[in-house]
Image 1 (cartoon, one colour):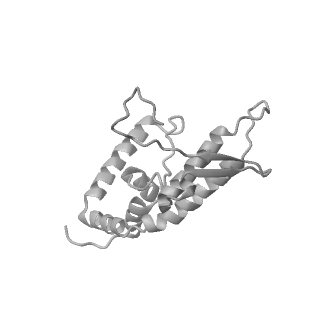
Image 2 (cartoon, rainbow, N blue to C red; image 1 turned 90 degrees about the horizontal axis):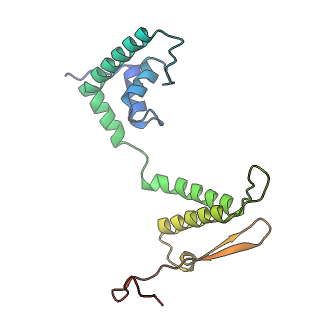
Image 3 (cartoon, rainbow, N blue to C red; image 1 turned 45 degrees about the vertical axis):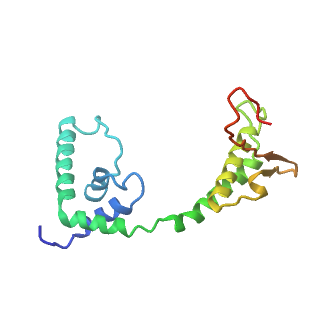
Length: 180
Protein backbone atom coordinates (compact mmCIF):
# COMPACT_ATOMS: atom_id res chain seq x y z
CA UNK A 1 0.00 0.00 0.00
CA UNK A 2 1.33 3.45 -0.81
CA UNK A 3 2.31 5.84 1.97
CA UNK A 4 -0.78 7.93 2.73
CA UNK A 5 -0.81 10.70 5.31
CA UNK A 6 -2.99 9.77 8.28
CA UNK A 7 -6.08 11.78 9.14
CA UNK A 8 -6.33 13.45 12.54
CA UNK A 9 -8.58 10.67 13.84
CA UNK A 10 -6.27 7.95 12.51
CA UNK A 11 -3.28 9.64 14.16
CA UNK A 12 -5.23 9.93 17.42
CA UNK A 13 -6.14 6.24 17.13
CA UNK A 14 -2.46 5.31 16.74
CA UNK A 15 -1.42 7.50 19.69
CA UNK A 16 -4.08 6.15 22.06
CA UNK A 17 -3.50 2.54 20.94
CA UNK A 18 0.29 2.75 21.38
CA UNK A 19 0.66 5.15 24.33
CA UNK A 20 -2.79 5.70 25.82
CA UNK A 21 -4.07 4.89 29.27
CA UNK A 22 -5.64 1.62 30.32
CA UNK A 23 -7.97 0.11 29.04
CA UNK A 24 -7.26 1.62 25.61
CA UNK A 25 -3.52 0.89 25.33
CA UNK A 26 -3.17 -2.16 23.10
CA UNK A 27 -6.93 -2.69 22.76
CA UNK A 28 -7.86 -1.84 19.16
CA UNK A 29 -11.60 -2.27 19.68
CA UNK A 30 -11.87 0.04 22.70
CA UNK A 31 -9.55 2.58 21.09
CA UNK A 32 -11.61 2.59 17.88
CA UNK A 33 -14.84 3.06 19.85
CA UNK A 34 -13.31 5.96 21.75
CA UNK A 35 -11.76 7.76 18.79
CA UNK A 36 -14.19 7.11 15.95
CA UNK A 37 -17.49 6.40 17.72
CA UNK A 38 -17.08 8.67 20.75
CA UNK A 39 -17.92 5.75 23.02
CA UNK A 40 -16.06 5.24 26.30
CA UNK A 41 -16.69 1.50 26.24
CA UNK A 42 -19.40 1.40 28.89
CA UNK A 43 -21.47 -1.74 29.09
CA UNK A 44 -24.34 -2.14 26.63
CA UNK A 45 -27.82 -1.53 28.05
CA UNK A 46 -30.37 -3.48 25.98
CA UNK A 47 -33.27 -1.49 27.44
CA UNK A 48 -32.07 1.70 25.68
CA UNK A 49 -31.28 0.40 22.20
CA UNK A 50 -32.62 -2.40 20.10
CA UNK A 51 -30.67 -5.66 20.24
CA UNK A 52 -30.59 -5.93 16.42
CA UNK A 53 -29.14 -2.43 16.06
CA UNK A 54 -26.53 -3.14 18.72
CA UNK A 55 -25.50 -6.40 17.01
CA UNK A 56 -25.26 -4.67 13.64
CA UNK A 57 -23.07 -1.92 15.18
CA UNK A 58 -20.84 -4.53 16.82
CA UNK A 59 -20.25 -6.32 13.51
CA UNK A 60 -19.63 -3.09 11.59
CA UNK A 61 -17.20 -1.84 14.23
CA UNK A 62 -15.32 -5.14 14.30
CA UNK A 63 -14.87 -5.05 10.52
CA UNK A 64 -13.75 -1.41 10.62
CA UNK A 65 -11.21 -2.14 13.37
CA UNK A 66 -9.81 -5.10 11.45
CA UNK A 67 -9.56 -3.07 8.22
CA UNK A 68 -7.84 -0.19 10.00
CA UNK A 69 -5.35 -2.41 11.84
CA UNK A 70 -4.38 -4.22 8.62
CA UNK A 71 -3.29 -1.02 6.88
CA UNK A 72 0.49 -0.76 6.49
CA UNK A 73 0.60 2.96 7.32
CA UNK A 74 -1.30 2.38 10.58
CA UNK A 75 0.96 -0.55 11.51
CA UNK A 76 4.08 1.53 10.76
CA UNK A 77 2.87 4.50 12.83
CA UNK A 78 1.99 2.28 15.80
CA UNK A 79 5.39 0.56 15.60
CA UNK A 80 7.10 3.96 15.47
CA UNK A 81 5.19 5.21 18.52
CA UNK A 82 5.92 2.04 20.49
CA UNK A 83 9.63 2.33 19.70
CA UNK A 84 9.63 5.89 21.06
CA UNK A 85 8.06 4.77 24.33
CA UNK A 86 9.21 7.05 27.11
CA UNK A 87 8.66 4.62 29.98
CA UNK A 88 11.79 2.71 30.84
CA UNK A 89 13.68 1.74 33.98
CA UNK A 90 15.23 5.20 34.37
CA UNK A 91 11.89 7.02 34.23
CA UNK A 92 9.99 4.43 36.24
CA UNK A 93 12.42 4.14 39.16
CA UNK A 94 11.59 7.53 40.79
CA UNK A 95 7.85 6.82 40.58
CA UNK A 96 8.26 3.36 42.08
CA UNK A 97 10.45 4.75 44.85
CA UNK A 98 7.91 7.43 45.73
CA UNK A 99 5.05 4.94 45.74
CA UNK A 100 6.91 2.38 47.87
CA UNK A 101 7.94 5.06 50.37
CA UNK A 102 4.33 6.24 50.67
CA UNK A 103 3.18 2.66 51.23
CA UNK A 104 5.85 2.09 53.88
CA UNK A 105 5.01 5.37 55.67
CA UNK A 106 1.25 4.86 55.65
CA UNK A 107 1.33 1.20 56.63
CA UNK A 108 3.85 1.69 59.42
CA UNK A 109 1.77 4.33 61.24
CA UNK A 110 -1.83 3.49 60.33
CA UNK A 111 -4.24 2.33 63.03
CA UNK A 112 -7.16 0.30 61.73
CA UNK A 113 -10.52 -0.47 63.29
CA UNK A 114 -13.13 -2.97 62.22
CA UNK A 115 -16.73 -2.04 61.44
CA UNK A 116 -17.65 -2.21 65.14
CA UNK A 117 -14.89 0.21 66.14
CA UNK A 118 -12.55 -2.38 67.68
CA UNK A 119 -8.87 -1.67 67.12
CA UNK A 120 -7.28 -4.33 64.96
CA UNK A 121 -3.74 -5.65 65.10
CA UNK A 122 -1.33 -3.57 63.00
CA UNK A 123 0.75 -6.65 62.15
CA UNK A 124 -0.67 -7.12 58.64
CA UNK A 125 -0.06 -3.50 57.71
CA UNK A 126 3.41 -3.58 59.24
CA UNK A 127 4.29 -6.58 57.06
CA UNK A 128 3.20 -4.60 53.99
CA UNK A 129 5.54 -1.80 55.08
CA UNK A 130 8.40 -4.27 55.56
CA UNK A 131 7.79 -5.71 52.09
CA UNK A 132 7.80 -2.21 50.55
CA UNK A 133 11.11 -1.41 52.26
CA UNK A 134 12.51 -4.78 51.15
CA UNK A 135 11.63 -3.97 47.53
CA UNK A 136 13.34 -0.59 47.85
CA UNK A 137 16.50 -2.18 49.19
CA UNK A 138 16.44 -4.62 46.27
CA UNK A 139 15.90 -1.79 43.75
CA UNK A 140 18.86 0.21 45.02
CA UNK A 141 21.14 -2.70 45.87
CA UNK A 142 21.37 -1.86 49.55
CA UNK A 143 22.94 -4.85 51.29
CA UNK A 144 23.99 -3.19 54.54
CA UNK A 145 22.41 -3.36 58.00
CA UNK A 146 19.10 -2.05 56.71
CA UNK A 147 18.64 -5.27 54.78
CA UNK A 148 18.88 -7.19 58.05
CA UNK A 149 17.09 -4.90 60.49
CA UNK A 150 14.09 -2.69 59.75
CA UNK A 151 12.65 -0.26 62.32
CA UNK A 152 9.11 1.01 61.92
CA UNK A 153 8.16 3.87 64.19
CA UNK A 154 4.56 4.53 65.14
CA UNK A 155 2.91 7.94 65.37
CA UNK A 156 3.45 8.06 69.14
CA UNK A 157 7.19 7.38 68.90
CA UNK A 158 7.19 3.69 69.74
CA UNK A 159 8.01 1.22 67.05
CA UNK A 160 8.70 -2.30 65.99
CA UNK A 161 12.06 -3.69 64.93
CA UNK A 162 12.08 -6.56 62.46
CA UNK A 163 15.17 -8.70 62.11
CA UNK A 164 15.20 -10.27 58.68
CA UNK A 165 16.93 -13.63 58.77
CA UNK A 166 17.57 -15.68 55.67
CA UNK A 167 18.77 -19.21 56.40
CA UNK A 168 21.72 -20.42 54.41
CA UNK A 169 21.18 -23.56 52.40
CA UNK A 170 23.73 -26.25 53.01
CA UNK A 171 24.20 -29.63 51.35
CA UNK A 172 24.76 -31.17 54.78
CA UNK A 173 21.36 -30.14 56.07
CA UNK A 174 18.54 -32.48 55.28
CA UNK A 175 14.84 -31.94 55.85
CA UNK A 176 14.98 -33.61 59.25
CA UNK A 177 18.07 -31.71 60.49
CA UNK A 178 17.96 -28.44 62.42
CA UNK A 179 19.98 -25.47 61.17
CA UNK A 180 21.95 -23.89 64.00
